[in-house]
Structure formats: C-alpha cells, structure tokens
Image (cartoon, rainbow, N blue to C red; front, side, top):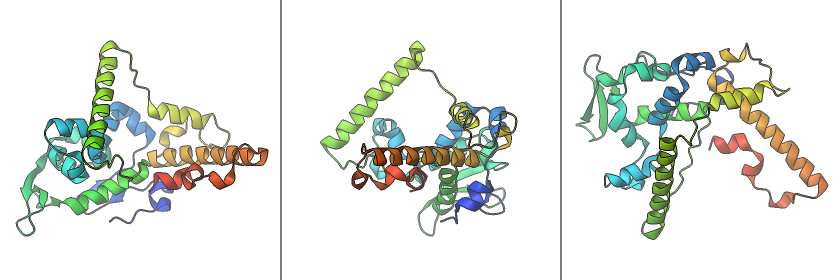
Length: 252
C-alpha cells in the first residue's frame, strides 16, 4: 500500500505521485469552485465508493454487494469517466484510453492503455483509493456487513425506501443540495482558532480544510467532554475512544 502520512499529504498538501504516468491531486478550494463542487463530489464518489453505497443498484443487477469490492466498482466505470471530469483529481490521465483486460499470468482484471503500455491494476487502484480517502477523511471502515438471509433483506429494503424517498424529494424540489465546502468554510472562518479569512481561504488545499475542520471540532468536543466530566454530567469510565478522538476514528 501507499506510504500515506499526515504531515506529507495533509499538512503539506502534497500531491501523490504513484508513478511517471499517474499522480493524484489535492486541489485548492478555488480550483474546486471553478471546476464545480457538484461535479467534484460526483467524481470522488465514482473513485472511492464502497459496495454498500450502491447496494440497491447492485441488487437490482443480481449482484450481492458483499461479494464485490471497491476495485470491482471502479473497474466497471473507469474508462467511461471523461478526462474533463477526472482532471481535477487525476490531471492529464485519460481513463477513457484504458481497455478492460485480464492479466494472462494471474487472471486478474486490469485496465490497459495500448498507447503507452501502462496498466492500472488492483494494487495501483488501492494506492489511489487510500490517498483519496485519507485527504478527504473518509473512513476505511466496512459497514453493513450483515451476513445473509433476513438481515441483508432488511438492510436492502431500508436502503430501497430511503432511495425512493430521496428521489421523490428531488422530484418535488424538497431536497436542497447544500454546499459542503460552504458549510465547513463558513464555520472555520468564523472560528477564532482558524487563521484564514474570506480572501485567503480559497488557496487552502482540501486536505488542509478537512484537517482544520475536524481538528477544531475535536478540540471543541474535548472541551465539552471535560466540562461534562467536571460537572458530573458525563461518566468518564463509559466514554469510548471514538467519542474522544474524532481524527483517529476517521482515519481507521
């Protein structure tokens, strides 16, 4: 796996060079604004989604979401992502030029670019995935591993109902898409512990925005917990590690 560490790739906001052909980028807020936030989150979703994120869609195709992984999902859509969409995170890498193939030596599914002979395989993809999740503070935790039978049916039925409601709300205009970056930026700018203002924040790297947001939330959470403990409202012995360490739990 990739050597991902906080100082190099979050504090320094450094891009992640996998090889001479593939670099994954950590964009500035201004770049995302010009690119379009909706398109940005859509691209990130395509590159990092987990099987349970689209469990209903997979079930409709007769696929058990617990029997596929992130690479399988990426493999099916990678060469359909135009460079105009992927460029903000993958630069000049043109995924549409990669053909779906099978490695004759080990039988693994790969993406092959016949123009330059480069290959994207499962190992390389997971390096990309690890970096993207790390700088966006997306947990690697596997959720909704419910086994088989009634538990899985209950989960899929619930997800189906939520999807139906969301589509209905969108159709009726009841669901408004709020800007996640606006919410985080506004909160931080108006916090005395944040050093950027309305003019300078546009140059911050996205990883640094997330780091600042969760760090300040973490400190605020610790302050509230300590106040609760000292006032007798909170029993310290009943606290879980994730209640205290927001940053650590997000990078699990």
